[in-house]
Length: 214
Image 1 (spheres, rainbow, N blue to C red):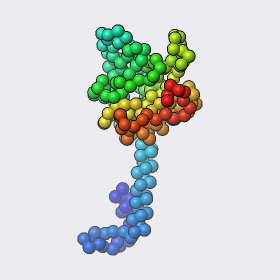
Image 2: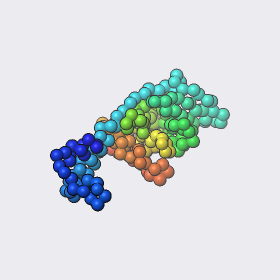
Image 3: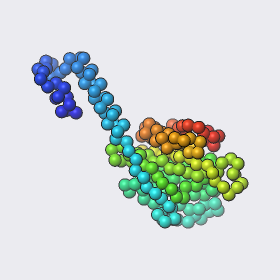
Image 4: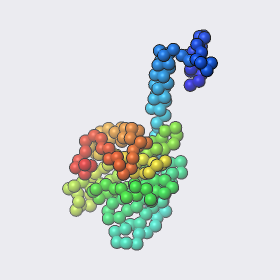
């Protein structure tokens, strides 16, 4: 940026303020400030990328058996760039959290309202400057008409914020109801995950969604 500013002022003799430091005219300062803001915004937008990891908890994770009825135990795995993953299951529902203290994070107590699972699949990691700040995972869930059936046709994209700061669900997208579900999930992650306040902010739902997302 210094090089840009020097280039901007090149060929001019700048007036001096009372400390002897060069300064630009108000219109030049405004133009330089706008240039700086646009440059930072453009770099930030271009800097957000994705990485993908596959997970099968039966093969890739260490399992600890549950001790109570309807407690299926928990699993510990490693994700992108060595980020720890914790998964818990019980009462036909799953919980997924991340980080060094994953089991103690808010996400370890968050799930979908219908019966659901995520035993295997692909995790999309949203990265800023190469560092993950959110994940997108496709969970399976039972549609309202399937409560007493063996089928599971519902699909939800769950967006979760990552450390630093608490780990929790940021938003949801109905993957079956929206043709652009992945794009909607990335929009939630990129716009909300880094500033999302767990326990205060309400998870964002974009696109078409059934009552189970309300």
